[in-house]
Length: 221
Image 1 (tube, one colour):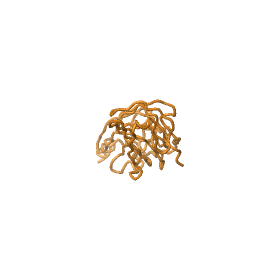
Image 2 (tube, one colour):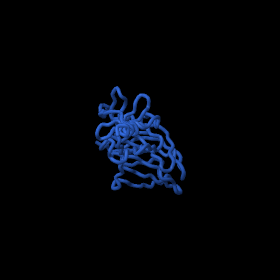
Image 3 (cartoon, helix red, strand yellow):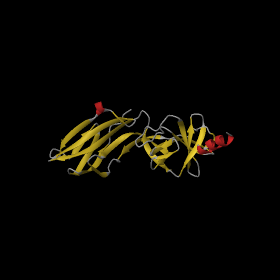
Image 4 (cartoon, helix red, strand yellow):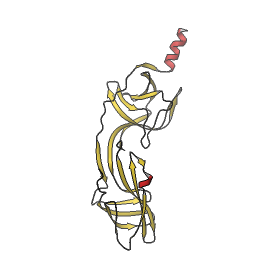
């Protein structure tokens, strides 16, 4: 019975108890891009102009789905929450674009050691080290919680008219009631505007548009 118990512990990679750390702080900033005065090119479906509150975050990116024993590690980004002498800690659930979440609800955090071992910390603070060299640390930009973003999207050209989509987002979630699609006739004016934003169209076709940023959106408090 003792041998069976020891074998079971080794099989599941139980490495003692570890408490996740939440001492990482990211700094949010207002972002308006591209810069005023810059000349840019966008293709159909691309963002031409964007404004909002964003945060540069450290994250761990798992390059492909992994599975070992009863544990599955989905591909995607895991946002950093803290660090200590054992390594760096990351969220087990990540509601961001290309974010990943550990299924099942039994894992509360992820620990990545200096040797790039990835350990799962369960709800009982057990550290289960099953994965090695499954990803890499990256810096990403994400929308801040409860933030408000605005963007213009190029939707193509028909004749002398171009189509621009306006979208509003709250924490990366689209607000359909505030979306709009606008048509501009370039024979009337090469300058187009929406909600305070002004662009000078240099050239446009049904695949791409070249434009200069004259003004970004009006600031939203």
